[in-house]
Amino acid sequence: MSYRHILDVDSLSEDEFLTLVGYGVTLPTVDLRNELSAALLFEKPSNRTRHSMETAIHKLNGFGVYVRQDEVDMGKRESIEDVTRTLACYHSVIAARVFNHESLIKMCQVLDKVGSSTAVINLLSDYSHPQQAIADVLTISDELAKRNVKFSLNRENLDSNSTVKVVYVGDFNNVTVSLLKALTYLNCKLHIFCPLRYGPSDNFYETHPKFAQNIIAHGDLDSALSEADVVYTDTWVSMGQEDTAKTKLKAFEGLTLSSDSLTVSKESVIFMHCLPAHRGFEVTDDLMESSKSVVFQQAAMRQNAALATFIWLFKDQASGGNKWP
Image 1 (tube, rainbow, N blue to C red):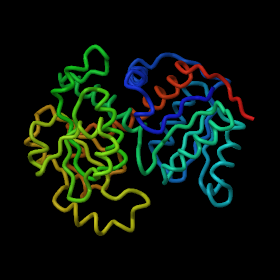
Image 2 (cartoon, rainbow, N blue to C red; image 1 turned 90 degrees about the horizontal axis):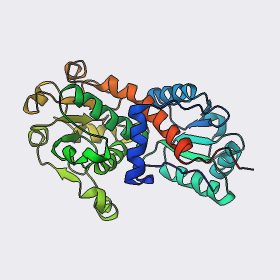
Image 3 (cartoon, rainbow, N blue to C red; image 1 turned 180 degrees about the vertical axis):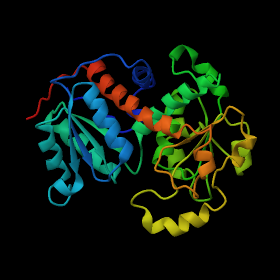
């Protein structure tokens, strides 16, 4: 039997997701010495992703190896399948940050085909970013509680989440997709304001009806931000999209969030950004550095998300050691 792979939030059932995020809150003491060996494969670099994963592995007494794209040149020097099978000879987890989501799918397929017990974790792809979404809902729950606003991660209290207004402003991208799925499992709608042509595609609505029906789209920014509990934005131009930068920056003119933007939101509103932030574009310095900003608390929570993911994989799936070759 293979490990479970986590390519997005809906790789898990709702019940499994609630169990996993619960570990992010309680952080049970787990020693994965001689069990957790992880290849951290990065086609694109990251500050938070690398440090959160490596420190989480260390806390669990595991062992991680950082693998750069120029070391393996996956898909060129060596096929995705061969790279994956080779890494599975040494590691119980392959955690990969890739440009193309299809690469992750191929990794899972080849491991399942040969009967490997190695798990694949998506650290970011062009389609989804589940580790960020796990950190996001942990942050929302923790930071709203400090402001006496209840956002529950417990199965018994999810009804209260329906009154919490979470707003995303910007491109409906990989971060938004995973956040939407996580909020859906937590009985919370996602309000969005996206420029024309940068919202959810018709294909997304058709192929993800369960999640798409949880979207509330707004036609103007003030409507979206009005009475918000959480306001979230992301970089307008992601790594690998530099060729579209000029077009996107023009489409997003006027959407820079500032402290003034949030005057129509609740007094207790929190501002989130998954970083890196381009100050002066999607957000101003004054909002990033304001008391409403929980951006760096959100960054710190990436470690809890990594710990929760590893604990769930090894504690709940109980697959043990590697079976390949």
